[in-house]
Length: 171
Image (tube, rainbow, N blue to C red):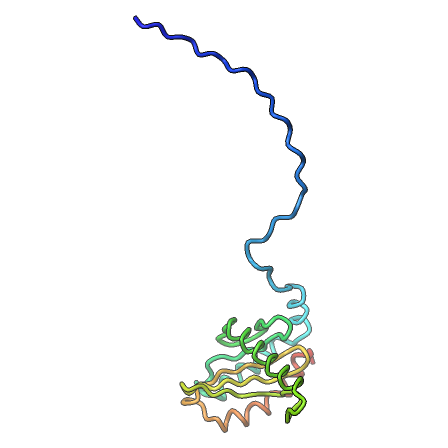
């Protein structure tokens, strides 16, 4: 029978203690969310029921031609109220408005020193209206130009705009 030797124990090893690590907060895996408190403040200032009713009235007037409509916060680019909202489109319209405004206000020989509204007609028949409402809000409207008559849109917007501004101020 073979002889099995007992394994020898190694001498105990002493590990020096590690230096203390500075405590740092973990880095978020995603970009920080928009300031929720600021958005809540904007929502609390407005009469949201009236705003939504006005947007639904616009939808009714355009008789199936409305694709989407949003009230956009200029600060965050987020939709505060809307129908068929598209968050990426809201952010894009907000950024486009800022760039257009900056281009106009920085140019020495610009014909206009700011914008109140602008319209983009896509090659697919879609119409994009972006309207400045006040210092904190924009109104973005996406319309199917085949289903809705452009002239009717130009009648509806000036009719609804003052009521929408009042509702945003909570009056």
